[in-house]
Image (cartoon, rainbow, N blue to C red; front, side, top):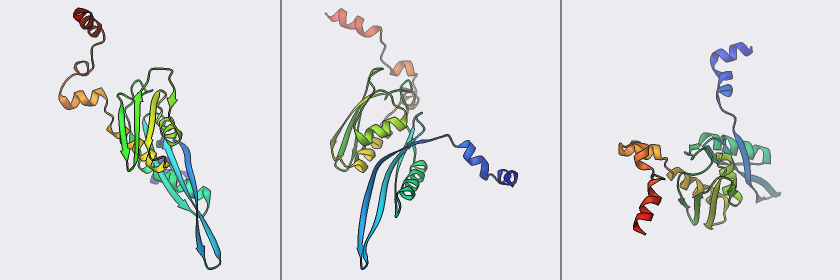
Length: 189
């Protein structure tokens, strides 16, 4: 029986998908008043990532908490985005992200800094695989808006390779040369 399922392509799909880590960011209990009393429902906000440069978020609503989390996780896996990382540990450049009243500022950081971010932003960076970043949330403290603003900023990020390719240059022409910058400053002084 298991052999037959593999031939149809059902069993293979699970093996091909990389293992994703997920983080429950927020859970909200909502109630609806009806004739016989109150009916409770749950809304879950989940961030999913492979910790190698892909991340996504999803929200799910259901009568039970586990079902809401499952729905949110499935939605997050469907809408993942790829973010280029510098040396696999930090961002290439400083970024601002906006969504509604939420604004976030994300900055690159030297090795060993760690993730300096609050709540929902921290979950996004951990699932993305960022190890060093400094960030600040300005405006809305709503976790939904903070995650959307963070992902808005992360989708704006560009690697030097993509910029060089778009401009028809080499990566070395795009990046500043490290040994020539101090020489220019000493010549002026």
